[in-house]
Image (cartoon, rainbow, N blue to C red; front, side, top):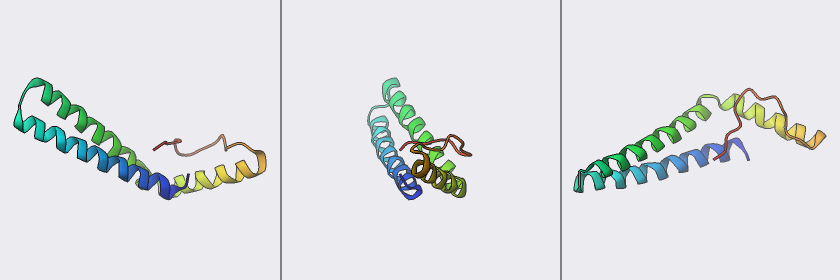
Length: 92
């Protein structure tokens, strides 16, 4: 997976979380109950998590790119990904 794929995946995930949060907001407006508030709060927590992941990648683009290049080279020469990374391995 390339750096670009990672960033675009996180953007897509954040947009999906925004859509879900919007639905939860509408549910809370229509029927303000403890259950709809809990749903809203859960969707907002998910949105915060996804935006935080995206921000982490954007703040450390160079480090992610270097780690990815090291993984490619290690895979080419040893058949395994590099064990050392300056950034966490992240999944979309």
